[in-house]
Length: 152
Image (tube, rainbow, N blue to C red):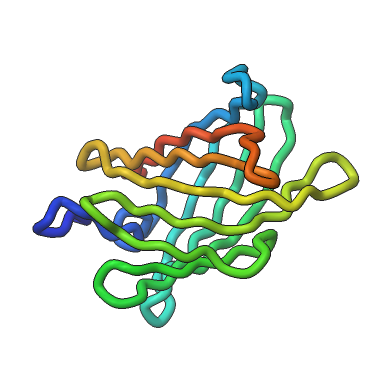
């Protein structure tokens, strides 16, 4: 079980092993622009969660990302991935994990530097909800909503 006594969860426990996610990207008007699914594989390497993600988008495009998520103290986290600029920093408060990071978002042949502000809430024993606001110069470009579930 990945819940702590105070109702918080440990992301490195929830995403350990194989899991699957489904999500959408909505633009700043709320219009759904993209749907996607993700196959995930999480393993611990010296206390660090190494999380491999394989994305499949509704237009047939694919993407891969590998995260390294490290607990810092009892409630903090840092995380990194290939297309991040620097690291994500954040922590768990009142049962919710929040972190923020800069990301190089691919748009065709070019990339756009954006900020992600992620929120993770374990909504059931087998379901993790992730919402993220994506901004540029403080203006919201869009949002992602993703539900993660462990695979048997």
